[in-house]
Image 1 (cartoon, rainbow, N blue to C red):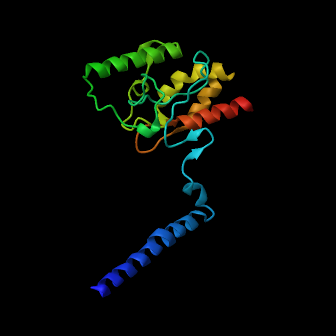
Image 2 (image 1 turned 90 degrees about the vertical axis):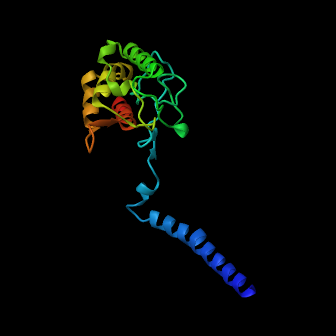
Length: 192
């Protein structure tokens, strides 16, 4: 029995050193290889994360210079902002009266913010994604916000529309615009 306990203890020590020290150290060293380092550090950059949509909050809501993400079901207010650490969908069906009420309220609020008729607000502007922290919006929602963003940043609407076009990507799904990248592009255009 002592022999088995000693063998088990040796295996525990060896595995602890291998998997608790050497393996994490090896992974860290590989992440330092030139060319891999940027990918190893994640998606956080100046202004936020390109993979986790965090809706920017204007200091003065009457002078809002930012493009906005989709709403989050976890937000306290209909349009957010949400806490990305508690993301998730609402799980309410499309015929749930509470859900329909929130959708109408969001549509009216966005229409007022953008100075347009509520019928022009695209669906992704008022519906939360399954995660609640989707970093992309449709080009239609970005275009809806272009006039306000242009005015508040001292840019022409044509310049902002060009930035939207430059930041529109397509892949497996429909075309989308990464809100963080677009906001950073607007700020760069504003400076120079």
